[in-house]
Length: 185
Image (tube, rainbow, N blue to C red; front, side, top):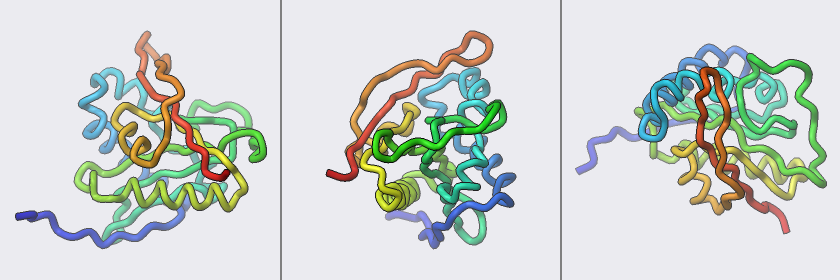
């Protein structure tokens, strides 16, 4: 018998005043849900530069949060800008807009609270992102998935383009997967 309580959550666009809660959520999500795929040293080195809040997504109105009883339990979004992943702390200069007629939109920065994992939150956010991307006249989407996130995107018909490692501080590397999907014919 399933003893998990039902979820009564709300999907909405993120606001700048959500940033502290997002930063806390990212720490919890990474340390719990990425631990089967990455070492503690890799996760800690990636927090901030790879796993972090990108305020530009919030400013652009392309970043979603899921709330349960007023608490943010999931987040993720998409971008019409050049950056394909990472927080904004180390970014210098503007993140340039991309051309929807020739460059894919970017799926970005998905994190779910460990207590709410595998309950449809990631799927709901990804569906909202794809609808918004199509409305913005992009035909394609691409993303850089963590090893933990790859199954979600594969379930949505994203195809692996390449596997590579992101260099990080201390000589560490983070294995990731670049994936793509055609959204419009």
